[in-house]
Length: 306
Ligand SMILES: [Zn+2]
Image (cartoon, rainbow, N blue to C red; front, side, top):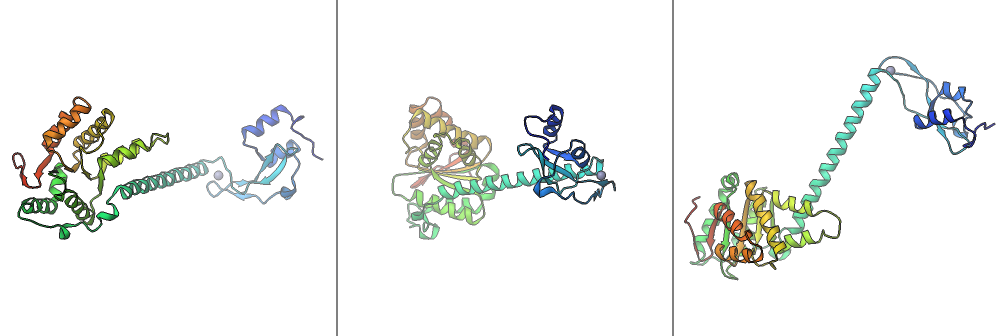
């Protein structure tokens, strides 16, 4: 008794069905003599709209590919009154808010994951202030760094960081890791990374997954960034620009950055300047303004006081 097939449906009816997302009222179903499918033989009870009190008939969902029959009845109330529309709108807004919340949660998870990945390698786990070997030579710097961490809130407000430089093996990385531990214990968002790791993680996104902006964003915005061994990376004009962009972004946002390096600030300037003109001078001026220079054998108090 199927009167319709996709070939001989009345064009107006088909347009109407399409327009309604294949949902028709009982009146329409009767008017167009649309047959009831196997799972829709019983016409369901009417419903009362809780917003306007109108009695509403259920609507049928039509399957246009199966001889055009009522496939099933919708179990949801539908009403055209303001109350119903308002409630639907609110439902939709709540759904969007929930989606946004989930999205934010996932972003936060991703951000934490990047931080966790880059943060303190396993072999550094035991490097803290207690395991640092204090000598008469490094004692002043050690004390300065401890004082800096004690007063970190003040430093964070002014975006003040440290530039710890000195020869290989004097314990710069040990102190940087120890600081990271202390800051994390104080629940300050801290990312510990080498410049090489930063550049590599940007490069690893070049295969087209488009996440390099995310990585730049995380490094630019983390509360404290500890960049170990700046100047030691394989400097190219690209890497010099990337490093400058990161430093500049943190400088402009008044974010605290702690550096360790084998080079004096002057040497660092020359390294970057050679790779890409202007980057060296710009990096130097920003670091000079925001970072206390500590030579892990003596220190430079020319410009800063705690
Ligand atoms: Zn209503």
